[in-house]
Image 1: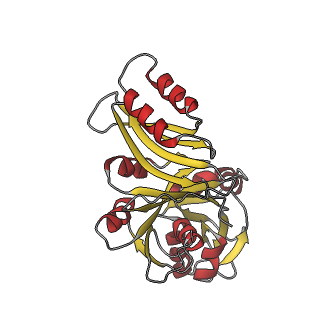
Image 2: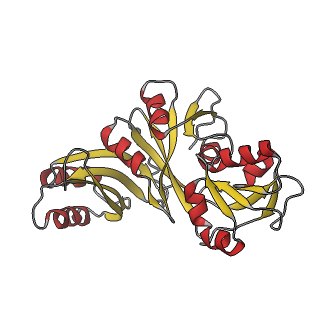
Image 3: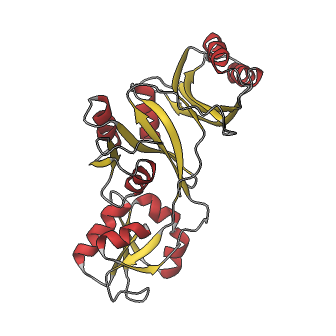
Length: 283
């Protein structure tokens, strides 16, 4: 992202070694990472100027969308600077001397436990949930008990001095989490000379009438955009009413501003969350 500035502060949720901490470090290597206990508090840290950016998860290939973050994006005033994919591997970690045979109980975030449920079932381990994977690893390191293990990243094992009892225990090999970088003002990060995709992140509501969504799809297509992602979320306080989130992708010849104007004609509300060049997976 080209933000190699140690004065930049980036908010994330969880403790050191959490996947959001790892993602923030890969996106902004020289920034100061600041931990917050919830998505809302990390989001508000940028709103009130404590931090310059927030890195929050918006989707996991296994567990689906992160609804709380979607609602914050809909209700709040921050913009998406870019979306980054982090390939996540889950690993069984324990204190020195522990092995698959000594372990009786495994602690982790509920999604990590879900992602490894086949392995956990096969081993017959008891499970317990933690606020996130890194917090689970920290807890296991402090307990110093060979019978208790955590599921977390390899980076976390190094951080808390744990052994990797077994690597890559997630049931599905392709386990990717998408993180959004949020900022106070919308800055267009567009590389016109590259072959990368031109992406708009948009939220909208439509009148409850037949063919409402079809008109939106047609509008995107007319101006050269493809709906790569579309999700609906219930609108708080309004029964059976939904808002939609989409990532619309086009190439250099696509007509972004005309597309946005076209959407405004067919939607009750249109919120452009960000306009950026597609970014590759984080390595």
